[in-house]
Image (cartoon, rainbow, N blue to C red):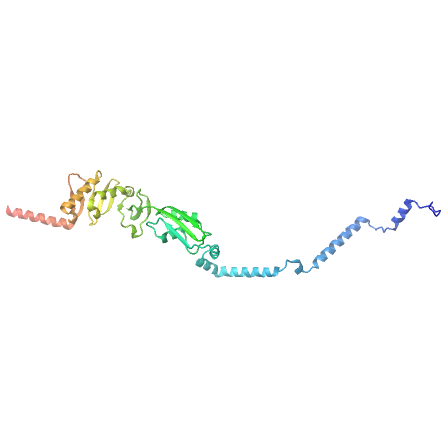
Length: 321
């Protein structure tokens, strides 16, 4: 009993009363949750669509798209119209242009070791021109290009910032000219072909002719040393069958030298010139291959004149008899 003399209701009765006051759904609580979730999702989609597009996109996206389209249009028009190619031909590649604009162009090129080559030839061989920049210049590639030039044996290339290239060369020394199968080459002392003879700057070099003559050019130059003043009249030497030399003089005369001791024969020729002025005679060839004799071949005119002279002498002798 409570203080009022009343009996309290049981706990179970109170709980039953509280429970009976709650609304009971017809299909159960799980169905209620599913339906509510579906309605929530539908409400969420409707609310997202309701937000204006301009508010959902990044700010100023239209400006950037317009600028991109304009840039693309200008670039496509330049390429199709040939303006980019014309610009490249006039000012070089874009990366070289940009480097020059920021002060990394090539202002100076120093070249040391020049003997036969000119500065222009070196610059062209190294691929250096005003349209390139120091920043993107490939020094190692330039060195390879220079060493591929026949007259250059070694090359060193350095980049010196902010605007200088230094080139040091070691040239191959031209030793002689070699003519074979109608072609003329400049050769080194060991017979290595340096380059094809295409200008007159090497015309002063000794000339050897024939297969294998390039490997024996030093022999010919030694023979010229034995000739004394006569050397100035020796124009070339032909290697015959890889065994012996035939000299060609500036008057067109051929001098056949022996296979053994050709230097002695050259000294004999110098003596004949000094004593008898044989270079002024009407001769086609002088054969010095025999150590005890000299065989001379006259020209056709000289031979005819000689024959007439012999006939006259014969007639005179016959008349006297």
